[in-house]
Image (cartoon, rainbow, N blue to C red; front, top):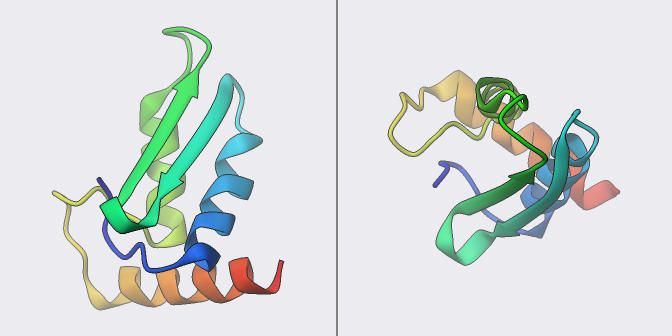
Length: 84
């Protein structure tokens, strides 16, 4: 579960930015459930890096702090996802 997931623009940005990570084989985003599902090759894939990438785009885990700066990052990511 992630915070700030609002629309297909958000989903597009998440898909684009996670699919190119080493070891990631599949990414699914369910906007209505606030969920991002990531499939990866094996235990050598660093889950921390995936979470960090999500946070850098403005989508922290739902249990993490979600301050104004993080929310603003998600709006930027959302807008970029709508343009692509």
